[in-house]
Image (cartoon, rainbow, N blue to C red):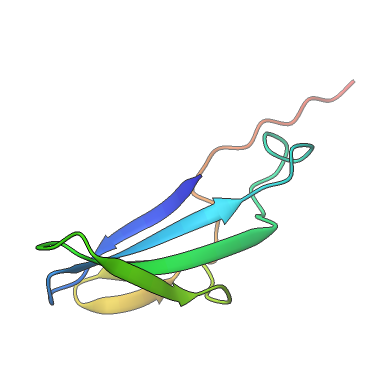
Length: 78
């Protein structure tokens, strides 16, 4: 599942994919694994960057580590 997509000033993208277990897919937003890739906007070529980065975003030329879940959570109580 695509988690983040950030555009760099150098003509590249940072693409982060999050992998969830089947059981937790809709119950939590904490991925089992996250992979980051760098992709050239011009050529479409890219490569593996890291599997240990946290969720990041590029804002005003700075890398920002995302520490909160931007998705709403629904809690069902009985």
